[in-house]
Length: 426
Image (tube, rainbow, N blue to C red; front, side, top):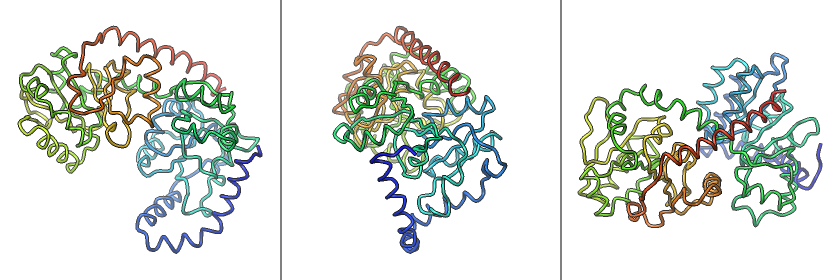
């Protein structure tokens, strides 16, 4: 075991969990959300492990969300396709369906729900077999950190970041991050912050670039396989991309972008084609988007995309089709990404690699993707402080030149990844 201040603290937390378990059993009775969490974890009984068949996995990955699974998905898939045994431990029910789907697809994969309430009856250390543990971004649970700190375990951090944690970068942070045998940082800025902390075994590598590029390579076939998009794709392919704007992962409050008479006039006159891809796809969320359009631009016509319906010119098109946002970015030269006037911006890397000029709100503090793009050139991404000013920020943009540049970024990452994969698979 690698012993330091952070490890000793995790041992204290670990021991406290044994004493707190009886109290938590009582509290769960009165809190419905905790009962749902307890039942979520108990479904581990339905899943086999590699220990059940006396096999040892080659690698174990921990993810807390679908976004984190997406971060390491290219590595997971390559290991699985090379017949390696892989374990995935996940924390959130938001990623459960996708993990179970992967579990059905690959015989050489096992998945496990991290027990936060049912510990010590379900313990990660009793389930895991791999001696290589990969964590992604955040959520440093004590049980995982103590396993990674073992001397017989290789411990890696993917998409590591100290963004907005500079003020906390003291001895305890050094003790925590020094447990990792290697860190793949989310940006060059993060590499510098880790180095400043005293962590030297770190390089910049954005794993999502490879996963995004795989989907972009298949964008045309993916879009064409969705029959409800036929008229939408046909219209976009017959327009100059420089006259097309998509509001991706958009929130209702961001419909304030339409509070601009010049913008409304350009839409109605078909000088610019605007599509809204809502962050949520429930009827309730889409109705909130529509109500917000009525509030900020009562005279602006809109249309919800439906199978077989002709798209009427001069309208904002609301696209509720799931699973195609990334692929849709390839048809637009301008992309406003939502979230930046709320909690934080959503993924800006997807539209960037698809060739779009990016626009977003000022709340970029949680986004390492924003830093990554900014490092490549601040002209690639424009901040929209006031939502009604979006239209005035749209400018000329050499899409062909940018696509060439971004293709080189993908190619360089593929070369670096091949070298990395050769080390991980051997």
